Image 1 (cartoon, helix red, strand yellow):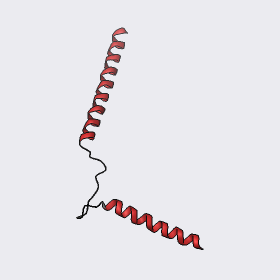
Image 2 (cartoon, helix red, strand yellow):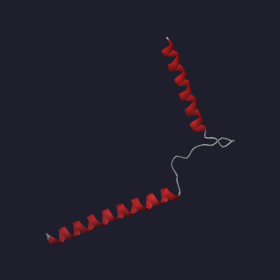
Image 3 (tube, helix red, strand yellow):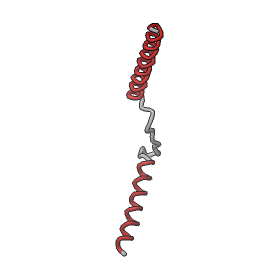
Length: 70
């Protein structure tokens, strides 16, 4: 019974240490080599996604202003 407990605790510690190590390595990798939030750039270097978002928001504001004038 004691041997089973020791084996269980050893496996638990190995699992948790390896999971924490993986998370640390993954975090360091993402810190130095940012892979997410990659945005497309057009020829002039401006951000296409942010330009589209701004235009959509401006259109929404104009529509709301028109509705408020009624």
